[in-house]
Image 1: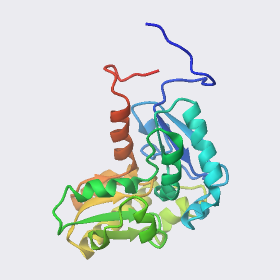
Image 2: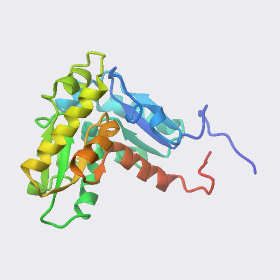
Image 3: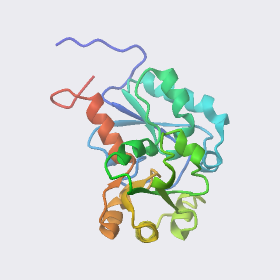
Image 4: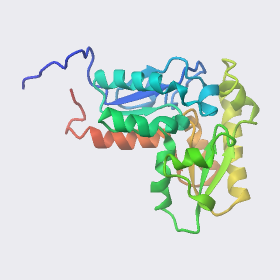
Length: 243
């Protein structure tokens, strides 16, 4: 077998590129921004200046920085690009039109698929970092504005979660956050028993998916389920490797 170099590329084998917010919270195993989460190599690229505060306020002025970071990931050879924030949906259309490779920036892109898994009278429950910021306009960017079929619960008032991931104090109490996330899921299903699938919008929530499932006994989808799905499509070599 003969291989040829790719101009400007200095490392190989990272199929999935992940755009990161400019955030310094602890990202534990299972989190989108922790490389040990994946059974395959990924490549990270920070978007300078794109903070949690800016993305939750729907700040579109960072488009140039997001685009530059995505182009760098493409230059380094990734086959598809995602992110570590569901609110990156704000940039989904611009990047998919520009990059000429699969772009899936938000976990919310799974919502239309999930809607086909359950009867029309059943609902999708979304746990989100901030229910006030997750507007119908943001949902619509992902084809996820399904009206009454969507139920939502925000974690912005959960003390341990908010401290770690919104206020970014630098400390994460994993046990307390797990309890808060599971309690939010239970409250969501109790408020509307028609909820039959849970989607975790925020990229820091996948580590708590097992606790959510134990608490409510429902299928739980998140950023990591989406990343695994796309990886399985863009890398089909028999041995799971690619150049």
